Length: 232
Image: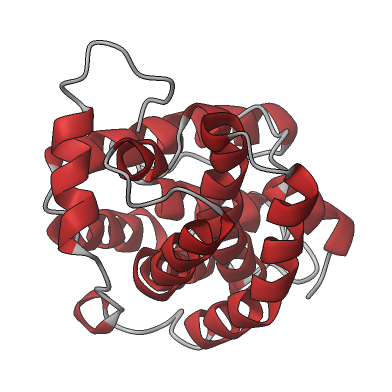
């Protein structure tokens, strides 16, 4: 890990990248009654980390390895593939995300993250396409001088902290108890990120494709709600 303070900035929920507007499917799960308390939240976060979190971490690591960088920065590993590799990663995430609503949400978060990244760090052009959130995260990590392992950790961490924060708002849970839950999940988060970092150079078709059908269905229902607290 090359720049711990920089990684903390990138993974900070206060980064103005719009993450606070998304519950990562938790709002629909709460409304359906599947997440009701701390124990059911723990199950939701564990499952999300093992499926979508593993996928997001691997794609973020691959994007960090592929993203062009404007200068040689200690620890940066960009330019192994460039925009063409990023396009392939985006296509791979499209194929792994059956729900159109989730694809839209991921690209919206990618737009917001790239806007924040360009305001903070010097970022080269990434091509004309909109980027999925994990791909954008990897590209911003590379621009910040971070490597694939850092990008993977930020992605895995965000997979659980986003919905955990939403749970405090949706269920009125004790924030101390929720953060204690995140602390218990930290070793698993580290393991998912470490494994994902080893996949940074893999062909897109060989990267993880973990998902869960129910959140995909929930996302389509959630997108039709007239009143909702979160965008996804």
